[in-house]
Structure formats: structure tokens, C-alpha cells
Image 1: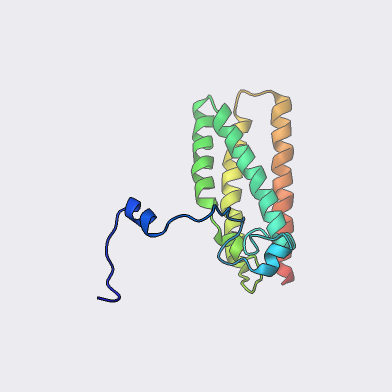
Image 2: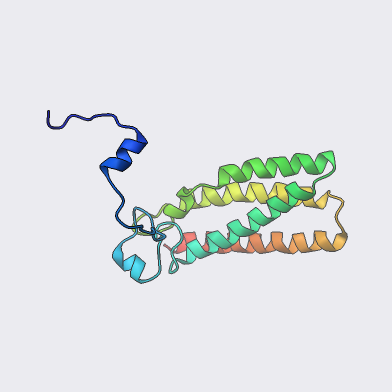
Length: 166
């Protein structure tokens, strides 16, 4: 009977579709077009090389991830552990693609969702930095963490400024 779907095992499926030659997938997504690939832009809706907001978002997120990782790693006191745990849980919520997708301007653009992602990251870095401040690490290390926190704050402000420009 045409159109009938028959269940098969994985080994049967391999027999039905014998391999020809190995194909290595290229970095890309469902949204990537030939022009994007030609220009070395495999993720245009999430990490476009010509999108200022995307570049700033990823720089900010990298600092947040680094500070949260460090906070979790070095937290020894109860207070530091508490803030490190909150930072980690908040970071998990902050790691979503919506904030990048809505910043793509292809044609999606929704500043409120971009800002929401920033605020979730802000909460994560706030708790990470608090954990690092109350930790047993040296004052020099705490000062370095503060500089990274300030850098993230500056990036967040630059992103916010960009949200008003479009």
C-alpha cells in the first residue's frame, strides 16, 4: 500500500540507505543561506560578524560565564557558596538564544527581549561578583575580578545604547 509507514530498526534503516561517502557538515543553522556561508557568517541570526549588538552580547556573556565559573570554583564559605550557586542557576536561565535572535535585525528586532537577556546576565554576574568578593582569594585577585565586572557593565551599557539606535 503506497504511503504506508513501516517501523524499522536502526540497523534496517542503515541497510535501506547504504552510505555513499562521508559528508562533514559545515557550521550553519536552518537560517544560514549561501551568501552567509560565502561571507563566513554561519550563524547570522545569533552571532553575525557584521552585527555590532551580537558582538557586544557575546563579549558580555563571555565575561559573565568566566566570573560565574570562577565563583563556583573558588567558593569556600557558606556565603560565597550561596552567591555562587545563585549565579550558576541564574546563568543557566540567561543562556538562551532569544536575546541574540531578536537582535539579528534580519528582520527580527525586539529590544525588550535583548534587554531581558542582559538583565538575566546582570543578575548572574552580580551574584558571581558577590561570591568572589566574600571569598578567601587575595585582594589582587578581587581587584582583577572587579575590573572584569566593570568591563561587563560597560559592555551592557554599550548594548543598551545600541537598543535606542534602531
